[in-house]
Structures are given as structure tokens and as C-alpha cells.
Image (cartoon, rainbow, N blue to C red; front, side, top):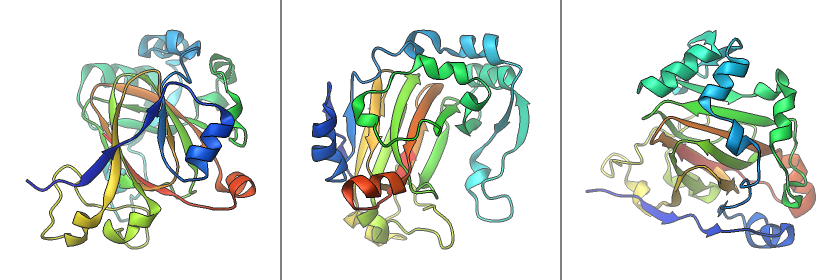
Length: 256
């Protein structure tokens, strides 16, 4: 069976700001920081039931896999529904339905009090905190974010699998022209159709609550939701990191 060359993302229990910068930021490597969010009130409070009770009347945009297809509907949502209705679907079905880059904090700024930011997040904009929700089995295919951010990604509920490739692997990933996506199947790669995939080397990680993954550049993230999952991502815009380390980069990611 064809398999991609995927290495485990290294993990640490904790890390200082200087060590994070020296060992991961400046070397452009991903890392899982296992206890970084362990003291967050959000880990105790933020459940699907909590969000449904407190914020269930909010109208949210829901997406399925069609939002990644090239054409006039590219990056478009399906419809708006009450947040409570989506959460019920998330917990009771395996529909291909997700919330994408949902900034609930614009409507509920008090939720920011449930997150604690250590020194290593200096340079990350606290205005750009996005939440992602997905039903069991949801997949976000290989892509990179068009605004080229660096991310601190925290799983708060459920389980997910993440696959990353560095920007240097772009030539092996068959990026689709004029968008930010690759349409190769990372679980069942067709090396006959896409022969350069055999030269690509990436990373993979299964994440669950209290695991925070720092993505240092990816052209390509794929997400695979192993169970109904809820996570948030803190974004550092590239212009902020240019000031600190003199380079720019992005990362291919897959979330499963």
C-alpha cells in the first residue's frame, strides 16, 4: 500500500519563551506543548452543552467539503443556522458539516477570560482567535491559509488528527493553480498519478484536549475529526514574526 513519509510531531511537557523561539520558531519546526493550556478555565467550562446553553441563539455559518472545490462556490458557506442546532448535529451525527474560523469572541468577548496566555505568545494578535467545530469524520483537506499565519492550535474537546508539510515540500504536493489547496489524498496517495508525493516528508499527530500544537509554517494542513471536536487557534500574522525572526513561511496542513 502506498504511504506518505510522515514523522511524529515532537512534543514537550512545557517550554520557555526563549526555548520555543530558539528551537522551534527560528528553525521553523512544529511542536506539541502538552500542558500549555492545562490551567485554562476553558478546559473545564467549554463543552458543547455549555455553548448551546449560553450562546445557542447565535447564527453561525456552516460548511461542508464543497467549500474547497474550485469554482464559483469556492470558500462559500452552505447556510446559517442557530449555533444550538449545529452543536446538536455535531454530537449526534457524522455529517460532513463544520464551523470554520468562527470568531465567537466578537460576539462574546467575555470568553477570552477563560484563556491564559504565557510569554511565548508575544507577537500573536489576541484579536484573531478562531474556533473550529467538526462532526465525527469531518475532513479539511490539504491546504495553506491565504493570509499565511503562524498558529497555536488547541484541542478543547474531542479528538483530531493533523498532518503537516513544510513550505519546502510545495513542489511535491501538486498545489492546484490559483488557490491555496492540494487535492491529493494523504491517506491513500496515488503515486502513479502524483509521483512526486514519494519525495514529500511531513508530520502527523493525533491530538486531544490539553494538547496545543504550534504550526510553524505549513503549506498544507489536513484535519481529520476522530470524534466530534472543538478547538481554537491563536493567529500570529506574518508581519509580526518578520520583525522577530526575519523570515516568512507558511505550512501545508491537513486536519482529520
